[in-house]
Amino acid sequence: MESETALYVNYLPVLLGGVVGFILVFTALIGARLLAPFSEENQKSTTYECGMLPIRRASTNIGMRFYLYAILFIVFDVEVIFIFPWAMSFLNVGVFAYWLMVLFIGVLALSLGYAWKKGALQWR
Amino acid sequence: MTDIFGQTLNLNYVLLLPEIVLLIFSMLVIGIDAFKRQLNISGNVPVGLALAGLVVALTLSILQVNMDEDFARLIQVDSFTSFFRILFIAITLVLIVGSHEYIEKSVSHVGEFYGLLLLATVGAMLMASARELLTAYLAIELLSFSLYIAVSLARSDRRSGEASLKYVLLGGVASASLLYGLSMIYGVTGATQYHEISAVLSAGDTGLTTPLLLGLVLIIVGLGFKASAVPFHMWTPDAYEGAPIPVTAFLSATSKAATIALFLRWFGGPLLPIASDWQFILSGVAVATMVVGNLVALQQVNIKRLLAYSSIGQMGYMLMAIVAVGSGFGSDATSAVLVHLAGYIITNLLVFISVTHFFNQTGQEEITSFKGLAQSNPYLALMITAGLFSLAGMPLLVGFFTKFILFQAVVSAGHLGLVTVAVVASTVSLYYYLMVVRQMYLYEPEDGTEQWRLSLTGYVTTLALFVSLVVFGLWGTPLYAAADAAAAGMF
Image 1 (cartoon, rainbow over the protein chains, first blue to last red):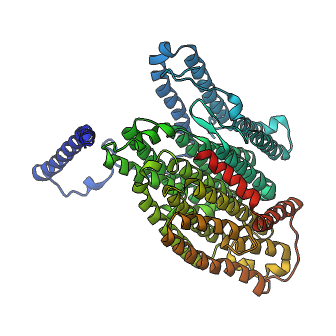
Image 2: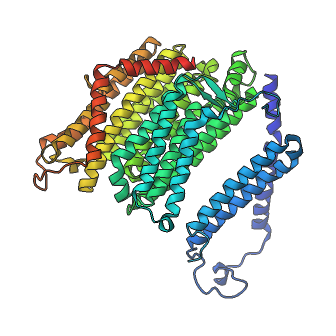
């Protein structure tokens, strides 16, 4: 039973963080409701666009191409996440680790090459 | 070679040859497909390469049947692994041969599709052979990711994208839950190796009952989703309906079988010492799965949705046997599950390949569109009828024999209540299988009695499956012996 209590103690900061977060957000919301002046002007409900009058609806279609680029970006993002711990423990593990990373980057490069060939990098 | 903990690792790459071969061929298929204009190759090259890879991998797996060795403490190549390797490769082989006309006509990105099928097969094979939690998890993701994409590849069918999105979103939730459950198990036992977890858990009370239970529940949620057990089954009919028919067949055969393999590996291995904690959860899930799956199937109008619910019901029977594994009848119950799985897959493939050819000819998949098939194509009507009867468990076909073995194993483990539900549910299932048979035999065809034929490969695959359906139904000894050897390797 003791180790189970220890397990819960580990989660105590999470609980505290949650409680404090709720308190902070709700005091801010309630405080604003109580203290801030409110005006019922019509202009207030329009979209804010750098102080100018909005020229069209705020929700527009975004090209699928952006998502493709975002996904390709993730390839490199993940690569960095893996390279950092690898660099930290590289000296301990030795040559084997080097070849593993070469393999890993090779696979990533292959996938990027495939995406390139398929035309994912072309803005059409 | 030793790892950073100083433990010796067995890096015998020969053990992984079937997987490696499939991986290389899948990359070849995808790569050649990307460069098909420059290389100026015919459309038959991807399918040829895929089939060649499968045949080579099948040969290698058969050569490794009697192995019992681990690879780097991550993969265990034993008779259990070999059983599933051969099963999975055979499924993909039969599917590609049986439905390549459909794939060329109704699937977009054909080359990638074949590559994805091979990758999914590799994932399924690794699921059955993993001996460590994270390897198993990665294998699940390899299978799932390939299938998420494959589901979306039906050409000019808007339901396909919807199906894929539903599948990937719900699948992500299930994976998260599974991973969280695994982290709980790791937190309690401090090990990811199956045998180490088993040792820690059987050594006595860990003092961590709550996290262990939480971990078990989360694992059952995650695996239950992949097996489409009932509270987590909602994605199944939609994904089945939208996917290209070969992918639907793949989902109902390989994906389900791999999940059951993992269930057996986990609940018959590392989690066996705490069987009393999960048995009641799994019994509840199994009963719900059998009842809901078979009852909701009664009101389906689309053949793919009908088969989806029928596969949910079938999963219920197998989950029931996993409860029996927990009662100390491990090797009997396991071999019964394996026999039933093999029989179910043979039957399901026959039905799905027949439906594929029906769709090729008519372009329809409603149950009412089967009206009068007995006149326009008596051979196909006979194949579908045999498959459906076998799914319902009629004698003389393999479905009866495997279901009998399965129910008997569960009864001898002392779960009479579960089997009662299963028998009633199985009787109900006969009704909706007969609905399809009724459409084919009792009605006149709507648009004349023009006869049509299957392609040669269609005849070959359906006939081969039909013959094994009947032969294993009358003489199930080889199937039973293989399953028995596989189960013996695990316990």
